[in-house]
Amino acid sequence: MCTVVPRNDRFTNLYLFFTMNYPHKQSGRSKERPYYLIDNGHGVETPGKRSPDGRLLEWEWTRRVARRVAEGLRAKGLDAGLLVPEDRDVPLRERTARANAMEGACMLISIHANAAGRGEWRQARGWSAFVAPNASADSKRMASLLAKEAERLGLTVRRPMPGQDFWVQNLAICRDTRCPAVLTENLFMDNKDDLAFMLSEAGIETIANLHINAIVRSLQVWSFLGTTT
Ligand SMILES: [Zn+2]
Image 1 (cartoon, rainbow, N blue to C red):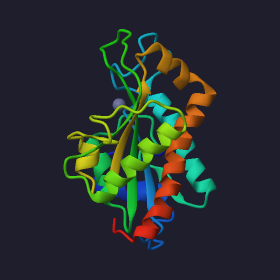
Image 2 (cartoon, rainbow, N blue to C red):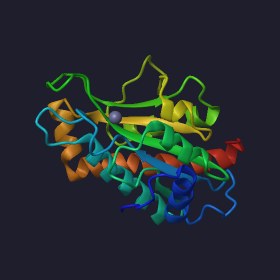
Image 3 (cartoon, rainbow, N blue to C red):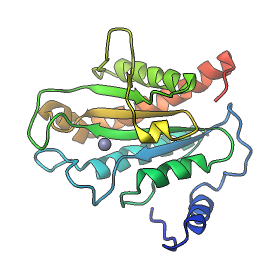
């Protein structure tokens, strides 16, 4: 999808962005029916951010996964869309402004590919979830559900300590957004074994499904718990 908006007017940009991408914006969503903003890391012009052999480009791969997640959620009757439908690298400030312009309940999941080195093959591998230091209970619960689902689908989950499903890091996309937000690092693109799985159809399917399943699960758990966003 490509969004064409005039360049010089931030408010016009934001307005057009929402009317074009979130037609359900005015539907009065509640916490029982939040809008899921799926973010994909980086843009076509972001330097680095690729596997050492160049077969995986993070911006392109995360868009593929994010699209799959958003489509999968919509197929299950949930409201979901891409925070960045463009291919270009939308700055973090604009990403967070888009998320914070949402009306009603929403949740943001930012999808990334991890790297341990700077362009060389490394040993580190596995899946991990991150929240910001100011994360709400719902962000933490979501991160935990994502980690448990990743594990259930056979991925190795990296934990800061046993029993803790997510890492706390000062990430702007999570810290500066008002809605609950989790960032997922979906395996290491500079580990040969992880990369092979990430590039396979089974890998993309598994990683998309872990997000879809965890979100569906969160709705079951949260309506039970009766929490706020
Ligand atoms: Zn990234």
